[in-house]
Image 1 (cartoon, one colour):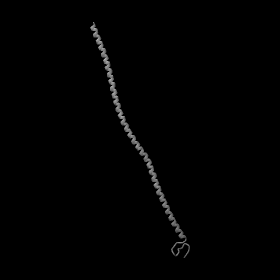
Image 2: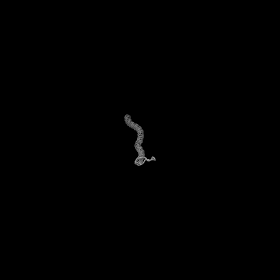
Image 3: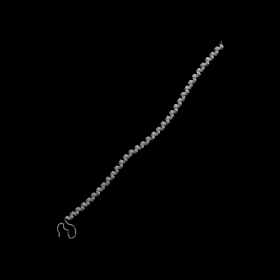
Image 4: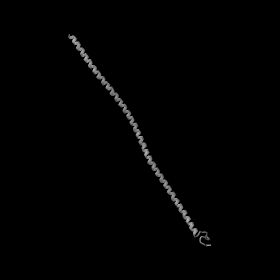
Length: 136
């Protein structure tokens, strides 16, 4: 029997069966190549997505980190300014106390000067009265 589609005596497929077998092998080979390319593209896409994700996290964290550093600097400046303000307030209070004491002393000097003028006038009046009594 040696018809088309029949198997020869040596056991090798002939004709249509051989073509189908080759097509099946070719399809299987192409499927493997396609699956390999798909897996490779999938791995590459995952790697690129991870890189983009890392870059986005870095960008966001960089801004957050800068903000955190700036916040710490501002807090340090606030504490420094608060200490300076406290020091200036104490110094201002000391100056105020000193000027008040000086003002009080000046008033006392003025009062003493006025008392001295009154005493001088009284002494002159008494002296004039005594002189007038002696001359009589």
